[in-house]
Structure formats: C-alpha cells, structure tokens
Amino acid sequence: MKNVLLLVALLAVPHSAMSREMALTLDDLPTVRQGETSQQKQREIFFSILSTLDEFTVEATGFVVGKKIVDQHHEELIREFKRRGHTIGNHSYSHFDLNKTQVEDYVADIMRCDEVLKPYLDEVKYFRYPLLHRGNSEQKKQAVYKLLSHHKFVIAPVSIDNNDFLFNVPAREASLAGDREEFERIRHEYLAHMRERIMHFEELAHRKLGREMKHILLLHMSFASSEFLPDLLQQLRGEGWSFISLEEALKDPVYLVPDDYSGPKGLGWMERISAPSVLTTTPTSIPYGGYLGPKLPGEQ
Image 1 (cartoon, rainbow, N blue to C red):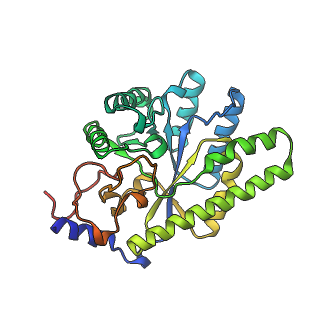
Image 2 (cartoon, one colour; image 1 turned 180 degrees about the vertical axis):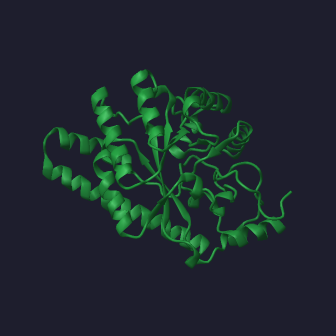
Image 3 (cartoon, one colour; image 1 turned 90 degrees about the vertical axis):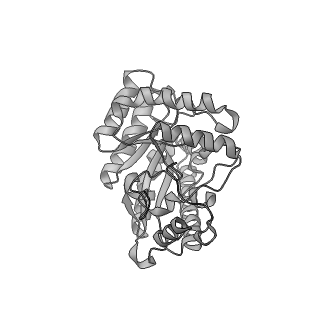
C-alpha cells in the first residue's frame, strides 16, 4: 500500500509543471517496403526522413526488424541512422505476432535480432512488440516480461498509436501515377488523422492522470513518413509540442504503472493501465511501460 501511495503521488504531478512533450519513434527500419524493392527508392525514403529529423532537430528511436538487414546496403543505413544521433531499438528479427507464437520461439527471435544489432546498440537495449501485441493471455504476457527483464531489455511502449501505415500505399500509388490532386488529398487526410489521434490520447491521459504526460508517438519508416513528416512536425510545433528522447519520455512515472490488460489487442499505454485512483498492485522490477531507472522512493 505504501508503494501504491508513492506511485500515485508521483503520477499526480501538477498540470502546470509539464508541457506538451513527445518522443518520436519509428518502426520497421530500415524501411517499410510494401512493394517497393528498389534499393535506390529505399535510400530516398530513408534519407528523406533523416533530413527532416535534422531540419527539426528531433532525436528519434528507430526499431529495426532484423531480417531486413540482409546486406551491406542495409547495414550502411542503420549506421547512418546511428551516426546522425538517433537510437536503435529491437523490433524482433521476424516481426512475429506474439498472439500466434510460442513464448520460447518469440524470445529466441528477439535474441536473434539482438545479435544482429549488437554493433549499433547503446548501453540501454530497447524492445518494441510487433503490432503492440504483448500476449493474448496473462500467462504468456508475464512469461515474456520476465524473459525480457532477464535479458535486460527496456520495453518501449506507445502512448499515441495511430494508423499512419494505412496511408503508405495510397500515397505511393498517387505519386507514381502523377495524380497531384489525389496525393494532396491523402496528405490532408493523414495530417487530420494524426491530429485526431494525438488529441484523443492526450485527452485520455488528462482523464486518467489529471495532467500532461511525456508522450511516445509511433510512426513507421515509410514512404508516407518521408513525404508527410515535415508537415506533421510543423503542425505539432505550431500546436506547442516539443520533442524529447525516448529515454527522457520514459522518466515519466506513468510508465512504471503495471500493465492491466491481457488480450489480443495492440493497445497504447494509457489504454493498458488503470487510472491511478484504482491501482491495486505495486510496481516491480519487471519493465511494464519500459523504464528501468531509479527505484521509487522508499523501495529497497
């Protein structure tokens, strides 16, 4: 009970003490292909996104699917991502769905990716679940948690989930067809969708916490991101958002709250946890949201 009260106190940060802060994360590095096999086009997508991050001075974390690192070309892209000051994370080797995979096979696949990424990893090893699926049963979820903790991974949750991937193929097809009107319509819908999703999850955090939180946004390393990310970052800056690292975002104590959800859905973090007022369990060493930093005051 003492730890619960301490956790609630940590969560009850005055609203005025926090601004609108967001960490940007990119899944499926080196790139989301979706029919695009040309190495030149993959490079264009990749370096366009890197240039946008440079322009807006945004430090991102990119989650790599290990099986996509098949030759020197892909290794070069990952090295360049790291060289530009961004962080590399593990998104598994095969992008398995935990709901359909045995725990032993799933964790072995993560470790296979870990071997591929060793030259690019920092001291902290981040892992993000493919499809945000953490297991369709409590037993499976907890088994993977324990193994991730044993291998010293930090789980990278998502607080702002969205369907950015749905815009990738239509945007690419409109671009290839030279249909500028359709392409601009897709751009407008993308930006409207992102604004609606961000507002939704910001309001959800306000309802559960009574304050701002340090958010974590999920995007993909895709053609759509290469085209629309400049507009999105400009939109967010204009709405008062500032960009922080994933490491900084995970210092928000909300990511220490136990994960209450067990089931097949891939959910954002605020959808997985209870409101602080109804918390009944205490934090443990298992990385729930992800942060494995300092212990709570009073913990041994």
